Image (tube, rainbow, N blue to C red; front, side):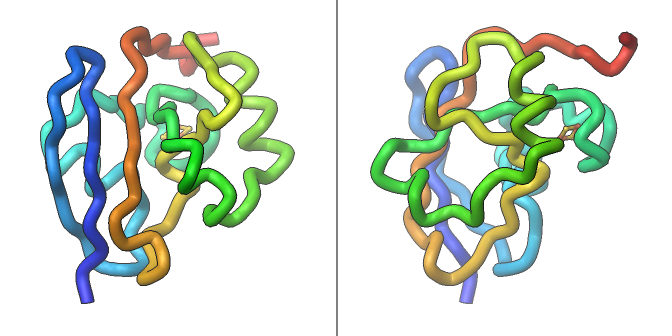
Length: 111
Ligand code: FES
């Protein structure tokens, strides 16, 4: 079954996408044309894959690791429900997930 994800862009546009369970949210976002660089390809070294998860969905995600939290501290425009999209794998119970793309992205990979 594919998992549906709705993105809201920084401009407030809504973009619906789908991906197979087991693939990273980052991949779905990029396939849907979202401007997430994902520079480090999931190595938790860049934070360019930062997204904000809708409040009602945040609790359904597998909790962020300490490394992810540390990297999020460096991301621009972090919110209480911020996550790194490379660390979230789609699963059937995330069908309908709502994700916002932050306005600012800040590539920290050069530091
Ligand atoms: Fe670099 Fe997610 S792609 S932290």
